[in-house]
Length: 450
Ligand SMILES: *Cc1c(COP(=O)(O)O)cnc(C)c1O
Image (cartoon, rainbow, N blue to C red; front, side):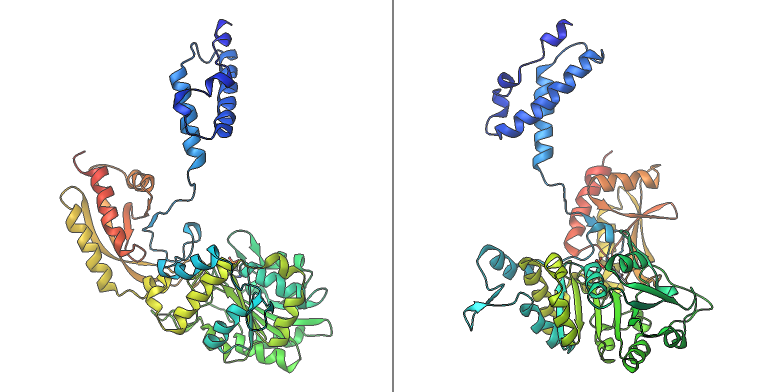
């Protein structure tokens, strides 16, 4: 066991020139761990000599790993616009300008500048939401899941909430409507069947213990064939007749009508507001195209009650979220929708995508087999389930490399592609214009002259 004696001493080893200028605390911690592993390896006869240079390299690698960002920007070439795994909605750089000033200065987050007294955090955003949607009042929480929970907990604790069986959905990230409901204290009253629910089912379910008629957006599935559901407008009317709250968990939530006929079965927020709902809620970072947030619109007296729930303190949003959301809403108010990347991507004409695909094709076709294809993609994020939107893709083939190998090479370079019919596709619906040149450079590096 002579080898054990050649394990360096931590105190001395960390004074090595290679670690100059680095955090002593972190270097000490890493060194201890690596030397302990070395000791174990020696005892298990896994190694037969101690190489100090190698140890230094290992420590430096670990240091770099720990101190660099794990979150990385990448190129979404999947075509899915609101990609749940890739950060959902993008923000335009322009909307950060004001948020940076808010985050780096003191501000009037909870200060009424006119009165010189304590003000209210939610006021800032209410103004824009009222102007945009004509709602009576509004509230913003951490995300739409929080909005659902807060609403159920405030109005339906130990009371019945009527929901169609076709809408008891599970959404990615383990958000299941029946479970959220029971955790919030509300009692679920299921009505109808999986495929069909009628207005009379709602009416028949109402009794003295009812508090709310709730509609939930199906989000990530759709029912085809023999099916029917009741529109929120009808539910809303029925609720009012019986003095109950009507609430629509819209999921995604888009302000204006969507292109490609997507709005046919997906009424916009402006459309829904016409039926004068008690409450609706939706996400800030799905089709709205802003930051993670849960936005609640509705009757003033109900919003007031939500504000009095202690839970709100736990679900409240930060000033940076509010600043960014306000900027996004201002873009809607000024009709500058091209500065909302989610909408810009959705609205880009197919001819424009085709031109971009051809630009890349011309740069790489001398060393890769590629073809511009008409394809289709989806908005994603549980926004418009099973609805296809047209898109353009560039297929990539290289010598006899299998599609999954090419996909892997791209992924190592932070380009996320998709495979269809054994071919790797770069879908231009989600590739930003300035990313085309980056893709070109990566393809050249990986495939040219190899
Ligand atoms: C996405 C979604 C939620 C959750 O919204 P988050 O903003 O992700 O918290 C809740 N309900 C429905 C119907 C959804 O589609």
